[in-house]
Length: 220
Image (cartoon, rainbow, N blue to C red; front, side):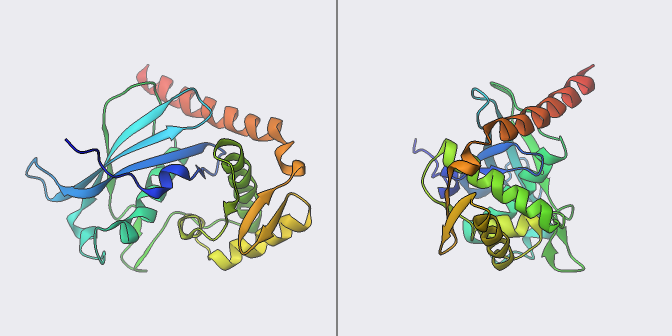
């Protein structure tokens, strides 16, 4: 049996608004549900990085209604919305990360797409929030993967309800503060950023604790 192809984003770190570094592995393609229900399914593994292997196994269920507005089910049209829908669920404390667990469903539906506006909706971020996300992105990507960090990612712009141009503009301001250098929207971290390890670790620890306490409470 062949191994499902993994998206290139499996080497990209996406951070939540609360400061959790995540890695996504999407098992393409979307498949029609075998249960007789009218939706398509994409299995995904979300790994909580820097956690000793904690992860969440998710079956993304694309509704028939939303399928009608998508140009296709190919990664170029669905990868960013899927990643951001999953990331939003983590930010809203709906995902539980464990060493091993069962596959949980996530409806990809009108909760994430405005039929009135004809666009994906994940929440508008302020410039201050965008700056914080960029700092976390550059820090965690550099620490966990290495290399330069791409700040022209459309997935990030979609999640923050902004444009890649605006992200680059804010990134340029952070570069002027000496946190990283920028060339063609690639950021190279400098010691002034990487030496803030305590800050980023504390943000992650706080967000992880809140997530775990929420699920512990629900289990009773």
